[in-house]
Length: 394
Image 1 (cartoon, one colour):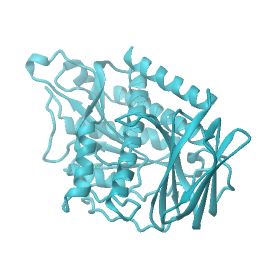
Image 2 (cartoon, rainbow, N blue to C red; image 1 turned 90 degrees about the vertical axis):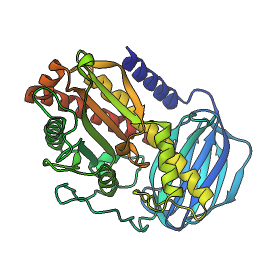
Image 3 (cartoon, helix red, strand yellow; image 1 turned 135 degrees about the horizontal axis):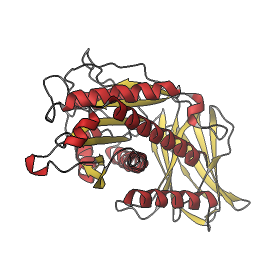
């Protein structure tokens, strides 16, 4: 099965990362940012794990240990903005990256990006933040859209996974609504099925006590696509899930099954063009760095990491859904869809089934089936964040 093979690949990649098979070479260190935020990118020829060796909490020094990583002699360089300077040395078979900061800050997140999309190296990324950067205002959502208070995620430390410190924020987007009915079945409308499914998923997630759930709409209201993305970014979302029902004409009425979409390369290019080339672009992206070249590098890194995380969640989600509903033969797809464009929020669009297929239509209208779907999606979310925490802490 394609989904099982995808998950097996993820498991093997994780095992290789954990075991640190072979010594990786540290090739390069890049720093970009401003007085409040910085991103440090360590280029490696192989995958590697890392751990923070500096004390937990805010401070003027960050030390990252990279076991089984070799550096060609001591390396050092001038920083930028928040990072005054950086250096790399080797102690006991481990490379150590030291960051000297201009003032107290914390490591907000760290992650490993594999080669891909034209990049031939692995990139270990650290985001450092002093918590004082101004928030970027976005257009207010219509009154019908419910927007809960954003939760600040505490700094990541080696002692505990992120969700020990704060609830994860999950935005659940019920597709269509109001004057936009979406696809039509024999006895139902897509906008009604998606809202019922979104409410079921919200209730299921809130029962765990681990999540703050933000609904882009909780009534039969029309919410513009760009506003849905803004709601997710304003909520500081950790994950965005858009629920939809697929459709085909009479000729394709036999087609049924769920599928999951993530952002395509064309969609990522669309975001980059809008951010840098259009003053009227609906999405303001606050990037560290003063010059456009640095900002483009940071946006590219953020997007690549975001697409990777979205794809990881998509594979986990499809695996869980396979136990409760049929899947399309090619169930993981990519597309240039507006609701997936946020460069800093992992996002998927779930087609729950075909409203033009009698069996799928009946299933989506069933409260029992919605509950099983909500359980599967919630299980996938639990697994995704658990895996994310494990990889981040290595």
